[in-house]
Length: 90
Image 1 (cartoon, rainbow, N blue to C red):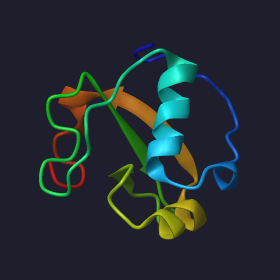
Image 2 (cartoon, rainbow, N blue to C red):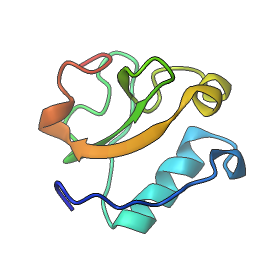
Image 3 (tube, helix red, strand yellow):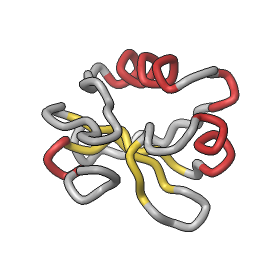
Image 4 (cartoon, helix red, strand yellow):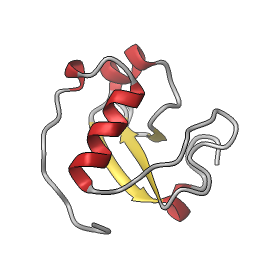
């Protein structure tokens, strides 16, 4: 999975919360994410879900309230957990 672009469109409005979206991503890409916390992010997880917002900034999925995420997310990317340091809380 690392480095391989999967050009898939996901309708975020189908999901009602972060847990629903994360479960779908884990199933689709056969990976697992740890628990998200505001202080630690996805610390300790092998992979971390990130997104690009309208301003072009990359952030951790879960950093903002769900409705704000749905309206501002342009692109999703699953990165290695070690690469997530420096994004959001990490």
